[in-house]
Amino acid sequence: MDLQQNNNVTEELDLNEILRVRRAKLDTLIASGNNPFEKVRYDRTAYSQDIKDEYEKYENAEVGVAGRLISKRIMGKASFAVILDGKGTIQSYLSINDLGDDYLAFKDYDIGDIVGITGFVFKTRTGEISIHAKKIELLSKSLLPLPEKFHGLKDEDMRYRQREVDLIANPEVKRTFIMRSKILSAIRNYLDNVGYVEVDTPVLQPLEIGASARPFKTHHNALGIDMFLRIETELYLKRLIVGGFDKVYEVGRIFRNEGMDRSHNPEFTSVEMYQAYSDYFDMMDLIENMYRTITEQVCGSTKITYQGVEIDMGKKWERLTMVEAVKKYAGVDYEQWETDEIARAVAKEKGVVVPEGDQATKGHVLIAFFDAFVEEQLIQPTIIYDYPVENSPLAKRKPTNKAFTERFEYFIYAREMGNAFSELNDPIDQKERFIKQVEEKRAKGGNDAKVDEDFITALEYGLPPTGGLGFGVDRLVMLLTDSASIRDVILFPTMKPIKK
Image (cartoon, rainbow, N blue to C red):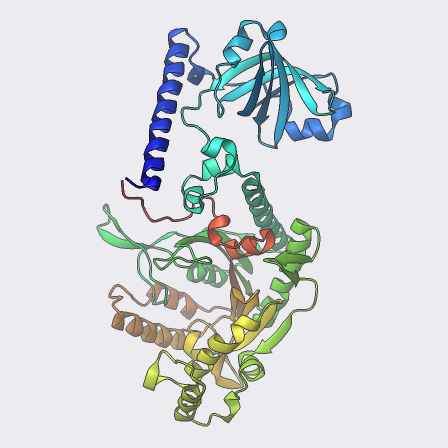
């Protein structure tokens, strides 16, 4: 047996002994009529950080605090203990003179136990704000030890699998998710204040639409039909615009049966919004102002630091067409490609791989050059607009150039953050694009893909000129909390099961 195996066996034996001892303590408590799991409430009157921030108000006042015991220092007839509550930590002084038998019981408490302490607030000789305990109660028993004796949960995989322990061991993690909540509130407040109405649309959908993302498939027993978890909220929201809503948005969970990496999770949160009688330029103004407002509101400034790079949300965002961006960063000019063959030849000369091969159009080649040369350059907030029709099946064609659409994406820190269109409202054109999309998907094995005839019918009733935009909430939270991975901003990210 090597050293690592020996260490693992020792740790397992130690853990088993800890579990045995803690379970025995619980059995003793139950036998004595003090089952901690029968406690139903505790009268908490203050939080740790509030006491520290407003010491003058709390000095010598009696308070009731409750939280997790994270350290204790036994010194015979007196001890110090630290508890972690919803806002931070606070020390408590406990003595046998004040607590009697409860002090003897406290000495047998374990790190991780949930306790309630009643006492008065004071400062120790070293100036630490503390609580002089007059009563202590065991409110819940911890049967598992905290990780590494509460020195922190460092194993990244285990942090994501056991987020509850991660939150206990790493206080900065909790701050990230409090920030996430504030960001979501700021998004809603901004959109509500400019006249948008929040709505909910179905998560379970009756068909696999012809979009490029692969859905999760399930079965509805009562109806006897297959159903699919949504890969976007777009089509239902645009049907609401047809129905007479002027401005709608949805904050919702999206599910895509695809790979995972530092910026992708199969389940994520998106915001999509649609505005009647507007176009993609209106959406550009909306998202730029929204990000600027949210950043200042949540972070206190329009300048933030992400992964060591300063990002300035306050400056006017650069706006480039895709053709301009490729010319600027790749040094090739789309306007000089007279034919598809010439475009493919330029790609070959520059070593740019075009996935469509010999079937590639000028639009496909332009997209390939953008992916190869441009995106990595877009560190400061930048809007790239006028996308080829080849990769924009739901966007309206530009009246002045039918090869392009009124679509934009915006990028920050070389990462695509959101997507917007002047929405296609021609039902004939839309159906033709849907059919082509379904054919392409079925050719790749997506045999459930179908044209959404209900959506086509809705367009036939008449969709006004409409601007639409969607973005991933998780990526915005990553940016504003300086988080490197999407798993750092999703409480319970999707994980590969552990074989046991």
